Image 1 (spheres, one colour):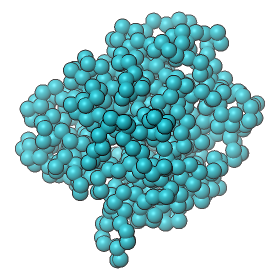
Image 2 (cartoon, one colour; image 1 turned 90 degrees about the vertical axis):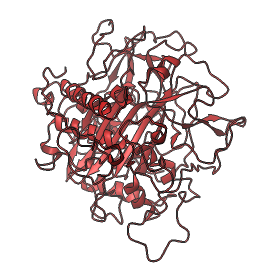
Image 3 (tube, one colour; image 1 turned 180 degrees about the vertical axis):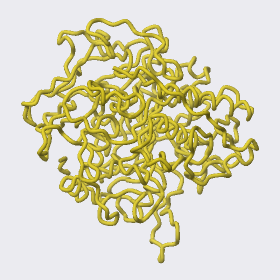
Image 4 (cartoon, helix red, strand yellow; image 1 turned 120 degrees about the vertical axis):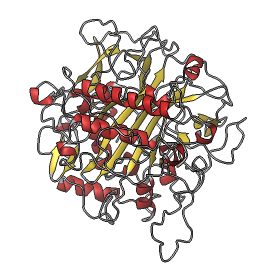
Length: 620
């Protein structure tokens, strides 16, 4: 096994949004050349750089970053084509379908859904990726894709995961492969608004399930070097980062994802959260739905799969509730991190949304002292500067210690509200019951709300011009975007000083602690900074370098390194630094584990909390 070594008060106006897609539906996606786009633009071409004419991400405003994120969202949620993403068409937008087009001809996978799933890039340690050429052609043709466009297959160790009894084997696997049931093994998330009881098909209908994908640029870089099956030089890369506090410059002998000296095509990774919808949600038209594959324990306790197609074959419809988009650009080698949510994720006990579709808080939940009350019961990090790496604290504790969980037992799921269950065995996390989510720890900033409002207005205008009624995408909102690393040079909450609460930049608490409420739900991930303490299996985060190995010279732990400079970064970027860059994966958690220590196994639900299965997206 590898060594692991207060809120803004003002917003700003958003520049006028413009529609750049042609009004001729049959030529909507003709312009697939990636070009920088100022403001908001519905086009099938994703932006490739943030603020290219103004000094790059380092000089960008939060408004510009939010517009960049929405432009990614528009392009990557474009219907794939032609032929609905069939073989030869991965990563390719349709030239005949409009954004959000619900017609049957455009109802296939979206562009990002045709990216390769993580197990399609790194299959079992005894296997090659599906479609990988054998023998390898000589010479290698220009722009060779190493079998990237083969239709999806999900080959695990053991190599065969069979259909569950009663599931008909399908000629083509679903593009959406939900093989994770928890967030990096820290906790599992549930939606109380789903009232369905366990069935013969789905033992946990309320469970939010996950998948991770990467685009052609990442796959070709890995596959062309045969860095699957435990061959990626992640160990050497991790050592280089540790010793030099910077990424390596040699993409042949170290992991350095594109763009690099070999390719100017940007790496894009996707993580998405999906769950079963209740009947009113299905009929609401507020959720994007798709065919999915998910996993249950078979009769011999080995994983088996079900596929839920549309219309629902087993009586279930799966809807998209969360979407992470991360992109490595020439000026952002640390990736730009954007996260979107469905509008109705946070509900009160009556099933009423806490936020509107733009992200405004419209209903403040009742609280008990101390305020605010992001969860019931309240939780708090206990961390000191004097602990040693193998002791507890740090840990996440209930406040007060005698606080009651939001239901009297795990056999009584909360109604309506979002809730989570921390993993059994994490001695630093409260694991004896459900913790209900009342609100975010940090509200979506007014700047982001303003851009969301402009984006939704643009979607409605565009949809009206193309004869699309009630576009589903107007019910998704940007939570925030991280576009430059920030150094928190102290332990404790970010945002206490004036310099740490600038509403016009990424220096504000919601930006620093970028988290999706249905992906990074528990305390460790909603308020992540520094690192996740594996010593003692606490599962909690800490800012102190004394709690991590290898030791660092400064008292505050640094999790992101660029150009010889270390940062104590929070949120998604900080976590990808701690679990991706520092593990030798160039900020990619998919790449960081090259399967020397554990084969990939699809996760299945567990009544005890998160399922601890060997896989490459886990706490290290």
